[in-house]
Image 1 (cartoon, one colour):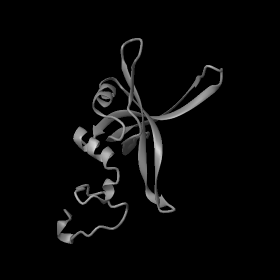
Image 2: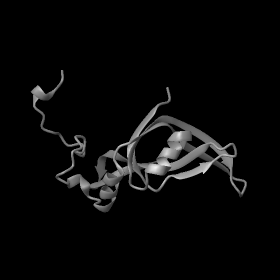
Image 3: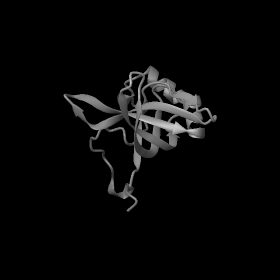
Image 4: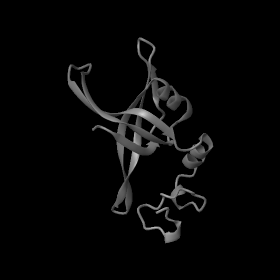
Length: 142
């Protein structure tokens, strides 16, 4: 089974292009936080991704550098020959489904005020940096 689910932020604006047949394709890079810190600093993986057709156009039209998105897809490897005749091997995630996890205004606010993890107005229940949270047993659905 080849299935990948990622949540992260775009490291730069998506690059939208069209094939000779007119099919939209967008390449983008996703910074995905790791669940642990190294020497007190947050670490991340930078994952190359590609989207096709309508998801590619929507991503390029509505998301930009710093936008938080969710990607559901599969890992793909391929190779090609570059201008110098060298074989280049690429591993990337082919995005079958892309979810926008914030509105444009939230994205602008987030990129303008970078340290939002300590922001008291943050309503993200998963923004605890892996630290335990206080939940009453009566709040659990099981």
